[in-house]
Amino acid sequence: MDVPMYILAIRENTLYCLNRDANIIEVDIDPTEYRFHLKGYPEVALHFVTDQKTCFGFAFECRNIDIALEAAKEIDDKAVWESLAQAALLQGNHQIVEYSYQRTKNFDKLVFLYFITGMLKIFNKFCDVCQVSEIGKDVIGLRINTVQSGR
Image 1: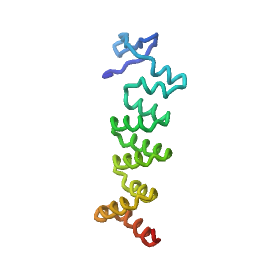
Image 2 (image 1 turned 180 degrees about the vertical axis):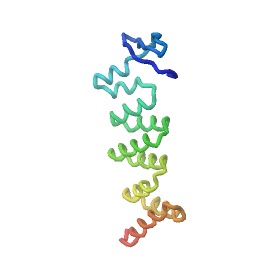
Image 3 (image 1 turned 90 degrees about the vertical axis):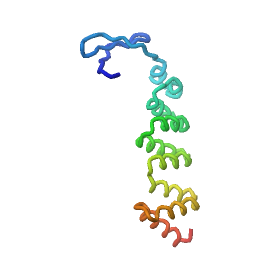
Image 4 (image 1 turned 135 degrees about the vertical axis):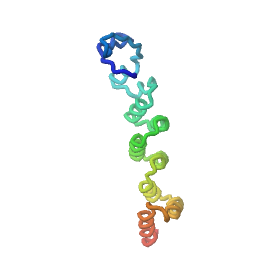
């Protein structure tokens, strides 16, 4: 909405608001989503949501990483990608963690992910590419320690 509106009441499928000119505005709403959510069924409410931020929130709450990923692609916000990466990491979904780190250009976490998941070919390739860049200093230190320890 472009102008501030103050909620007066909700009756059935109608939201009654007051604008700054003291005019009552009626807005038709679909209460299905919030009714399921209020009753403790966010996984059902998730299927009625059209707003991607709300969809991400419900998917995150339900731990539905796949739907959260699709919503994150639509939203494309750094904070959303970081939240998704953390949730996917807790679920052990390394592909989504990797994708999220790539989207946020979080190279230090990305290279560490490659290292701890045993993707050493990608890790070494990443280190070679990063040698010239600013982040290469930390990555090279990790690589040198890895080589010295015989891994």
